[in-house]
Image (tube, rainbow, N blue to C red; front, side, top):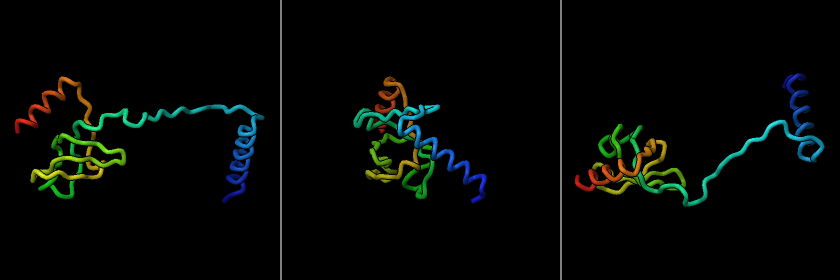
Length: 110
């Protein structure tokens, strides 16, 4: 590590210590909103964006989905079996309640 980088890091740590001890005020603050558990929709629709098994999980197809809290998505695959896939394989789609009712009707009629 260069002397210049070390001195910059040292200065930052000294400033952080003064902020934590109350000597100085923070120059900026960040607020992160975390949704309450259970406050998000657990069911909806997802677009498949990646698949290692295209015969079971079709890319660019919209699936009725169940979303878990640990980033997994449950769907009914092309063989009609309930399956769970990593969330990275899907893009969650948010529709109005009217559109969702129509889509649910289409899924149930199929």
